[in-house]
Image 1 (cartoon, each protein chain N blue to C red):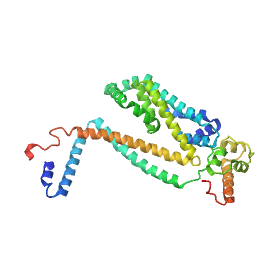
Image 2: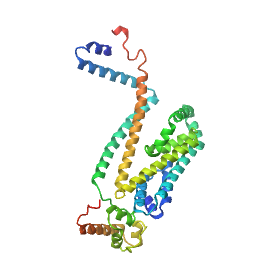
Image 3: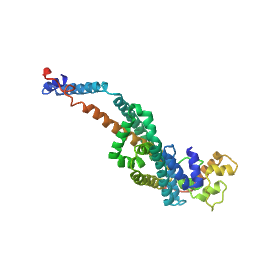
Length: 210
Length: 148
């Protein structure tokens, strides 16, 4: 798969970047990091213009995001409600809506370029809870452009070792994802554990033991 | 009850009191976990999974970073163009183009696998020709590391 995608890029250039980054933003596994680094290396050699790569990449990624968003908006919500209706699916959606209203911009922005594994899921969720489309798109375009920019710059600087650099960055991305997930879940657990601490019979010794 | 004990012993045997305190906290945490609802248990399991993932990728990232630091030459792959190999190995493109029987002055935009196919030979053959040319070019230069 990786070889095929990169061969396409060698043959057809920036349009491949558009489609591959689009598919990846939608959730299809693609060797995007290596592709963007290679694109950067090719920009460094001078075979392609920088703006072409940046435009094709961020437009493609944004298109993939939009696809996910509208799938969530028109297919996701009814589906979630039907499947989880008996287990309080509506409540889950409302909860997601509340936390997105609070954290949405930040979550969206960082999921575009730093914690990328959650990106496609967040697109679906945003669509399902009818998160503001304007905000979704503006933050999305900014985040995706930053993402492409970072990787293309890295590709220009490390053009003689794109494969090793891609391996390192893929691993690093999953590490960041792991840290983010563990922090969030750990915080939730801490809340569960400390929330009951106030309960009078739970931890505080009763007067009889004095 | 144990918590209270720890306070009374605190003045004399600080270390023991501290240990008792720790055990008190951990047993009370265990008790709370036993009383978790199904959703809360799921969060706990997800947390443990996230920790394992984090540790695994911390180690892997360290490995990759070490490799990245030490390693220089990239394996030549079928998807690369001649110009990309030349850039990666710091060899002028015409040298490599001549080595695999292409005109030296025209940049070739086909991936290597396509070139091999068009020339009617295997990619491995093409690859070894390129590697030989790179080795020869480097051997001719007094200080091959100078352009890094």
